[in-house]
Amino acid sequence: MKDIIRALYNGTLSPADKNLMSNPDIKKKTVRLVEIEERLDTLISGEAKKLFEELAELQTDIVILAGEDRFTDGFKMGVRIATESLYDKNRR
Image (cartoon, rainbow, N blue to C red; front, side, top):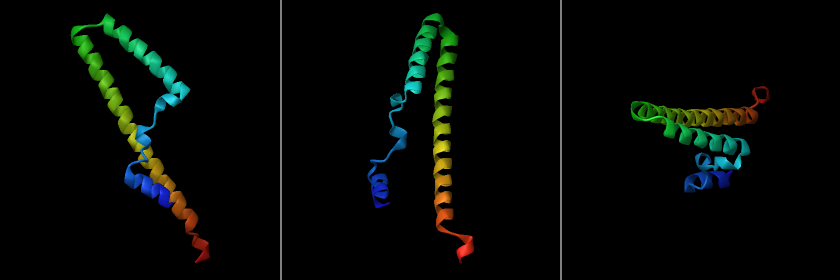
């Protein structure tokens, strides 16, 4: 327990910094995403290009916010499980 608390305090524990490219499915989809973005970049211009860039940025923001929510929800659930496992109502 002390090790994880120290890692958290020292900043060496950072799930958000995990390299997602170690997951082959994410890597494959990212490569395809870049291919499509590059292709679209050559096909569109002007206002359509600005809208596409805004769309891509908003999607990225949503993914980041959703990841934060999932992480915090998972953490809270883990704490609740740990707390419940340590406190048995029937043992008083």
